Length: 402
Image 1: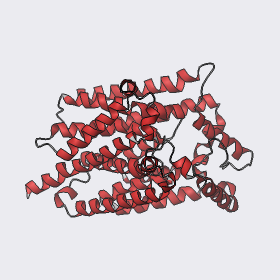
Image 2: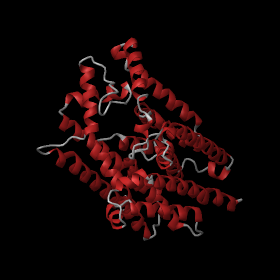
Image 3: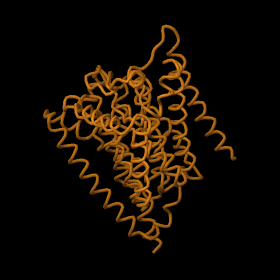
Image 4: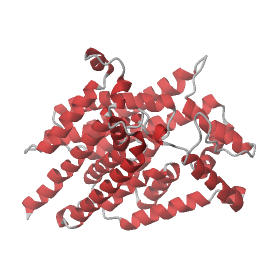
């Protein structure tokens, strides 16, 4: 183990323990605080234990995950107190985020680093900090899903299938992430993940029987269907469609705009996958972690932009993504103008989103910037930068070899 790896392990371990102390220990000291969205899991588990429907669309914070998700974590939500289970959940999330940072920085960075890497790392952490704080303050699951996806991109076959199957039974809209395996030409892996997801979704029927299972799925669908355009266009949603609907002052358009953006992303993803398929030099590199992580950046960018519910706290993903992209830009001998402009605009958006800067320019609340879709702009810029990065690093490089 070299010195850089040791320092990296120390850094991500420190970050994990800091997160666990701040959100898993300090906040639960008397009088105690448990994130409201996390208590939803306990409510659902308690209802299941009492034989009552755990899908109640009229709740202030309704349970919207699959029955399988509840079964998997049922012992955690019923076997421990709320404080103890939150500590365990926080530990899983903290170490998941730290593991994600480690994978990106250990497997994705070049052997020799420009000194500007530390500037890229520091600014990326600052820009993603608000999302990090909101995620743990709300008690969300997205860090675990991110960790599972990033691990799946470099994990052995069956481990990757298990991790992604868990992601899809948690949030079906995360099927957008399957585009990664289209980029890497692993079509069979997509099929295996879908089969694994189907198996996980039907397994709880062994516990409560097929009739109840069918009824739970009907209730789940009904609960998800109650997400109207008012909910979809709240300031916390930073999807491209939601931001555009707010700016245009036509919030009912959000569903149509979501379908339009998803369709456009699907077409663009197919085009990129076909271009990779036709690039023999690039095909030979598809097993290398550095290329896979850069394709993961493209995939995450697509997800942030087009998923119907791109919550503001998802910007914790900016930490590893922006660090890797800035580092690649600094290492280029020939500057990629598209990538440069995208990252500069991203940085300007990230800077304005800092409360001190926002207040200095006369914006009292960052939430006003959320309404205007400034986080959505940051997501879009990272997607453009990540896609352009693939071109400059691999397509042009392969041409020069021919």
